[in-house]
Length: 98
Image (cartoon, rainbow, N blue to C red):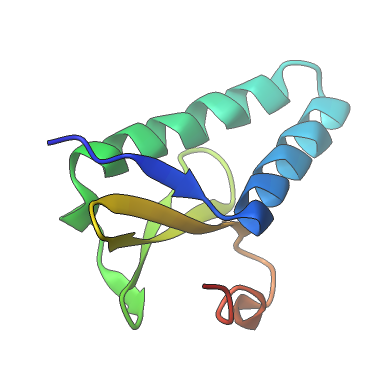
């Protein structure tokens, strides 16, 4: 069963900002980032339990080729993406999100 994915506003902004930043570094790199994050989201929708919990019920999926992780939880028949997070940032920044 494929679950719907919902990104919190902060996660949407992080995702878009990172893609824009990568595209400014090299044209097309932002699209590569978008494609890889979407691939992670597609896999989560099919198998949300595939990744270990890292903070309470929040799980972490690594984005291939980029220093990003997708932090998410499964709730009431959907997956909620809490953050599209650069691994060099302070992790306490996302821990207060609902």
